[in-house]
Image (cartoon, rainbow, N blue to C red; front, side, top):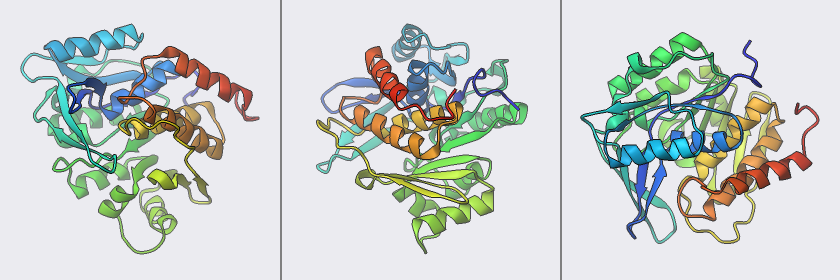
Length: 304
């Protein structure tokens, strides 16, 4: 069994720029955001992706280097551009996305994967797997290392097919998704707990994390249904990346053997902090230090 306190997480998938209506451009992409947060929390993730040899690609690599992230698995593409998403914010505050295609992260190559220690956990989303090349690279990674898998479902029309996403869920240990995604992928009959437990039984999952916006989040396992209400967001700026912040802290909790309810509460709290800023990642290292300091005061009994 891998020692989760020495092995690092591996994060696979897209990195891109979220481009806002006011001309603001922010680094993003769910896997990149998760890797960024985990780096700041001291987990030293290996981030596997691909960028173009263009200005955006250079900016991405420079940002990773400035954040002391491992760039050894960041592949460079001389033909396709780096990822880009145009973000618009509706009157109700919810973001919508226009996602460019094809881009470099659609062509993550299996032969460009690094040699590394078996990961403590393998995280991936679903967007970067819209292409056969990147899907093959992920499968090669899974075949080689047999690590626990955390799937973060991100359904972005028109870039997903139900059977393909369910195939990904079938190989997972943990699955995170929101209410709309559960409706799109699962049986619409019964309670949330009943529907997610069908998946747990069918796919032999350890658990499902269901995010419910203003109604908080819940973790459903074979034996528990844990619920946490979201904290009050004092000054909401934009919701982009809140789910990724949640995912990062949930993974951190798995790596640190936190109790699930404490992991859920902490993930909600950190997601709320990201909603209070523009963009999906924080450039302020002090934010992460302050969060870790606060958590250290409420350390669970089984945390090393």
